[in-house]
Length: 284
Image (tube, rainbow, N blue to C red; front, side):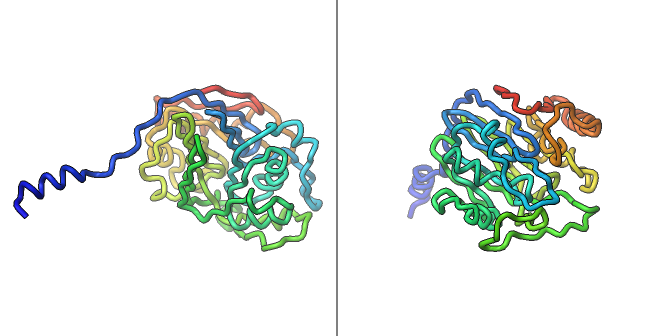
């Protein structure tokens, strides 16, 4: 084939064009306590790790349906579970049942949800790497790591198939950890519910809002600066999972959170850092 025809063919085929970026609208973020968030926009509500019960952890654990009724939204589309520890998963199936949401999580999270009685068509089991469209929203599932508990001597654990309920705190195994990139109303919101990450999985992830957990970050090499720079120095960083998940929600973060805010500002001076208040709806 003459060279001119080859060039014309290449020009005609071209490289696949990416979809145009939608105009950026307003989204609302509400801190639900512990690692829980509500993300709303374009008529879509996505919850992450909703946990309202805060029960006596020495006893078998059941969701506090009154607390859920007080604080959970009336409806939601998705519930994203970062990992299957009790302070991330305990209430999620009850919240899904109340709001009509689909629950997205690991096999461990799915095992608990099924045992709770959540129907199969409301459970999406993930392994990491998925990038799913949900109408006006999309969600990329990013393989991640849990924070380094017990000075790195962590026993990760799983939740067995068909567990007997109620479960004890020890039976809520981590079951694998995920971060999420939520795309909604022209925004990209990155959610990391525990202080660790896999560097290669975040290459090219540049959200305009990053929700980041600071707890036990001292166990991870250069956690704050590495993470913020990997994410492209996002315009907004919001702290999460900093309150006492053993007791009732109390505004007024621990003093150690001041150090995290200072670290972000040192690493990315142009980044706005927000320490949220419980159930305070922020329009961004």
